[in-house]
Length: 104
Image (tube, rainbow, N blue to C red; front, side, top):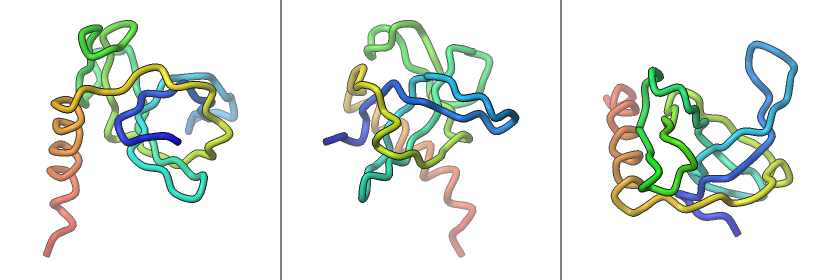
């Protein structure tokens, strides 16, 4: 079973093309074999939460919180590593900050 904070290797269809590539993503949560993930990029110029080799990444990268989508559990090839507790908290805080615009 997948856990929030797992970084997984998955097949991703890009929004600007029909091409499907294998990329790392961060599991936010799983429900009924649907997995909500955030994309990860090695382009450090992108905005998001940075992750480093110290966190478990193969190379320094960015969790793109503006690129959240749902995939089938069958699209996941393997779990790469699990984010440290502090980094999971940073992701949570950033998501809450972005979602506060929904509050009344």
